[in-house]
Image 1 (cartoon, rainbow, N blue to C red):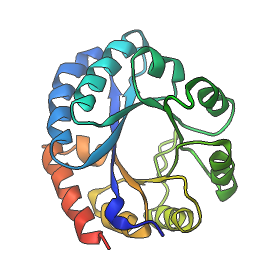
Image 2 (spheres, one colour):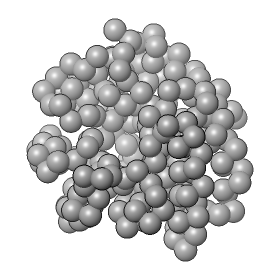
Image 3 (cartoon, one colour):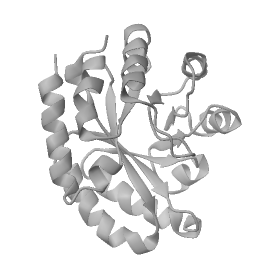
Image 4 (cartoon, rainbow, N blue to C red):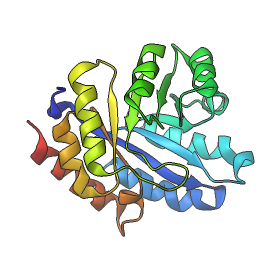
Length: 212
């Protein structure tokens, strides 16, 4: 099992548009200062694709100042054009193959949407930089916490490729950390809070208590 003491945070932004950017950038910068964040996944709102490069570049600059890696959701070309550190692909398949071909080895390629152990193992064999478990699916369904804990513990026990485990609520941070996840992904649990920085600081404290 991976050492829980090495666990760090992986932030997932809400879908962003240019209209959201100024306000979000302020909250984003404060959140990065509140905890040990390793990386951030930038999501672009539907209809905002024309402004995607501007959005990503703004967050890349803020993240780089904190030595935080920036990834782009489902768009390897945008990741390269905007100077991001890599891309996250929401499911294994042709998009993952294309992202690996176009971004590796210079940039990071991670994958989620892994419904089965076989899917995860195939992604690992393909050479991804990390696998993600437990994130919400396109239909809005989020796997039960117990399932994500089990999957993270299984992966950490056997494989070297890092594992990201999604925490739908702050209370999930401790059990996922204890399971051996290398990174804990946080999205709405942080951004829907009155103070994302305070929420992330609380998550950091929960992670520290679970460290073994």
